[in-house]
Image 1 (cartoon, helix red, strand yellow):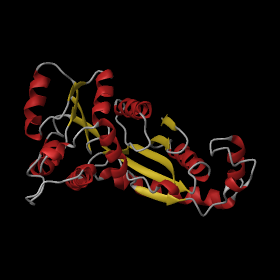
Image 2 (image 1 turned 90 degrees about the horizontal axis):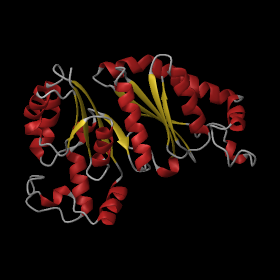
Image 3 (image 1 turned 180 degrees about the vertical axis):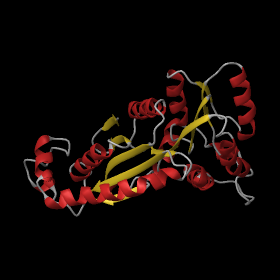
Amino acid sequence: MLNLFVVTGISGSGKTSALNMLEDLGYYCIDNLPVALINDALSMLAANGYHRIAMSVDARDKESSKSLIPTIDSLQNQYDINGIFLTASTMVLQRRYSETRRRHPFSFQNDITDEKEMPNTIIECIERERALMTKIQEKFLTLDTDKLNTNDLKKVIFELIDGIKTNFSLVVIQSFSYKDGIPIDSDLVFDARCLPNPFYDPKLRCLTGKDTKVIKYLAEKNDVHSFIEDILLYLKNWLPNYMKRERSYLTVSVGCTGGKHRSVYCSEEIAKKLSGNWKTLIRHRKVSIRTLIL
């Protein structure tokens, strides 16, 4: 069966970079394919012997945003479909456009909304595109590229493709700092700020939740143990229901004040204990990205 990987998301969030990485993995890649041409393009490529295809699609107008999901759904029985939705904060996207001196795609559109006037600023374009993409975002794994460099994005893409080969449902466990705000790609959020904080021990302050001394400190705390077990109980009870609702991915975010001690330790422990039944990908937004746990 032909394998289709859909790359979609907000303009400026890294779709072209992701597509280049998929090309390195042997996918035949198509950038900015109009939704109306998806069926014909796939039929032609399949007839010519292509079995791994990646395409970048987005919502350049209202009709595209409305028709993309029905189009993808209609292909489910013919193709093995996976995908990713890339996004970033408006501030980061604005900075990227400023650095590259490029215009936002919506700057050229007259039919973005029912309003007659054109968007005058990059921020207006970004927010209007984000509104159009809301339903599409719910279809795929969301990846926030605010803090990801090219190498980090490459690791995530490679791990996703590696997992797809084994037909899995992926649980992304990520730690974060509340100082940076809750990650916009979160499906479930758990707050670890109520737990004892290693930061206040001068010997542990410069370490992270992946270091032995911090692990020992937190592992000895009953509250930490209860916090992790309660999250695991919830996930084990409800993950099957999430995945039954046409979800191949679920992102679970665990936050603490600085994003380096409690949230990192808890994320690591949750991922390890889930890995017996689910494939997990660990991401630490303030430390480093970890690989898939099989």
